[in-house]
Image (cartoon, rainbow, N blue to C red; front, side, top):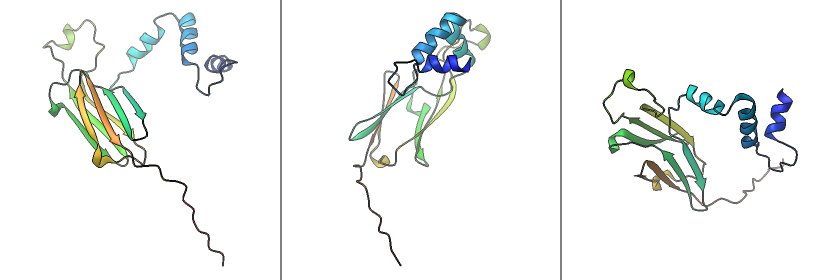
Length: 155
């Protein structure tokens, strides 16, 4: 069984070092039913925003999904131990109890997400903007240092 899973993740002819998750997902859907991944996902609560992070030569850009924020007091950014911390609170915008909910897929409540940043990140120049449910954080990067030679003393 394990070898079948590994074969599905890295089929022959897959020249990429990345696993073939789409192929594995399709095979799981064929065997376990089309709603398998939705059923699994519903069991695992998402308590932090989904994030994309990409790097350009000048900056690191973090894009976090945080739909429904109503004020700046509901979100905080901080930096500690080379990690960017995104914390906040999502409040359900309609006044109904949990018992009244027939389907609840969105996350409400406090959240936290920690992202490890590269050593070249210049925190002092960081800028953050919230627009259309996305928190966009731009972090300048120091220029890459070349290789540094370390002298060796012979005695």
